Length: 290
Image (tube, rainbow, N blue to C red; front, side, top):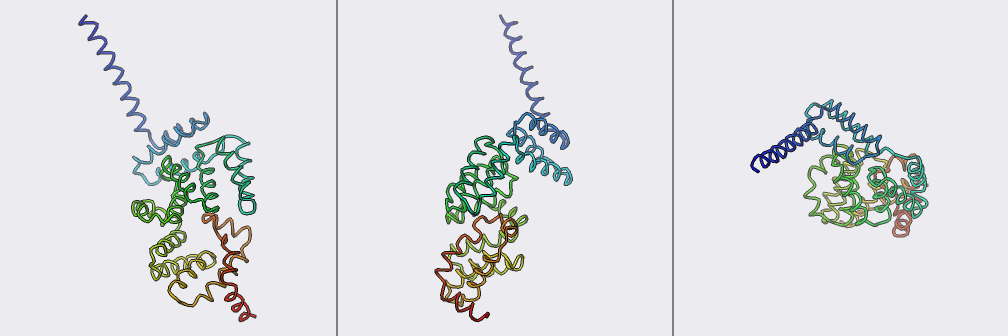
């Protein structure tokens, strides 16, 4: 009886040791081995485990070059399409994104059903919600995406855009690391976001400072002048130049420009309403330019 008990205990301990060894090996994969394993998992269409493998390796890697290679692989494998059908749905949705918003979202939802963990689909789905003013849904989709992949900085950007849209200032204070990543990767969009947050907090002069920094980074981006008009107006300052510049900038945007500014899916979406609101001012400025 005791002998059998010891044998059973021995088997339990042996199993535990094997499991621990497998777990340790899993954690101690080199960068190259982690990338190879993730690629093999991708061939099996196991995106979740492929992404988790690369994230574990990234979290422990100290070599800068190895980290870049791991991050490059993570960006690729977290967004790769597994089927031609999904890719076609996604590309068609993107082509409809500005002019047929409802149909674009329908196609993105269909693509997500086929590949629910694809970061690229999640990104554009959350951008679509943001464009439609559905900021809660944009936040939900982007938050789930970055929880699965904390190195998904484009997802962080949409998440913060949605938080500011919802005026969730307290939540922003807890996103210090995310904000640092956004500032480093998307400096102009970061300044624009911080300006919007300052406007939400009624710190209009601080908003102006942020918008000036954004303008120094890209003076052609129309949304700078949209928010600058709002900040100046709240202070009772002259808005003629900024209001007319927003309209001119929006009307001058090409398809290539919209692609360039895809990180802000609401670019010039307020143009029609803005023109109605500031019609007299814009007309007066237009006459001066003639």
